[in-house]
Image (cartoon, rainbow, N blue to C red; front, side, top):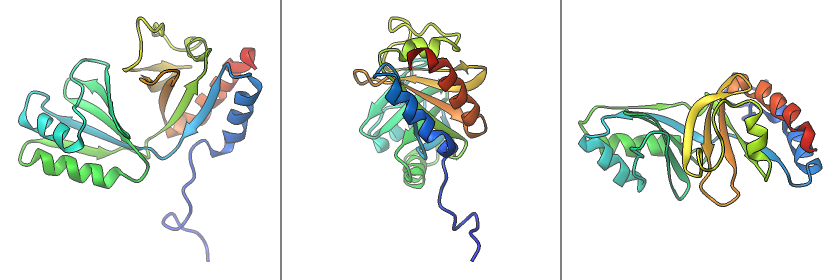
Length: 200
């Protein structure tokens, strides 16, 4: 029987380069680590940041929505990224999309809220290691020095001409998440691998 879209196993956008990412990590001597974090739940949430729904959603998720521009709040397996004055990206473990959406809608009640599952829209690249800042600085216009873009910050920017959401992780030596549209993921992985050649 032929596989259909409903029965075929999930295939990540970067499955074809996983071996190359792992090889670059091995040969860099620990300077760079590149890996895909596939299938993370990603929900775009829009609501009035000053309304009752924002506080209610934060309580329901046990994760207050960040109100400072370009900041990140993390609690357990959930991460909320500030994308705009009334817009956030909620990132959670794979398969949690429906549960998170249900909790958000229930908490918001009658308040206006928009919750869109964008999990299939992007994949996530993990970039860590002592040279992670240097690697990303090759193609990102932001000042990535920890004083300017330290732990707990995020930004919508470009990397190697691809639009990304860049997240500076909050754990020690945790590096960066690079959230990129699935259609550009292969291109960006190739760009990162090429830029990393001086460290491998």
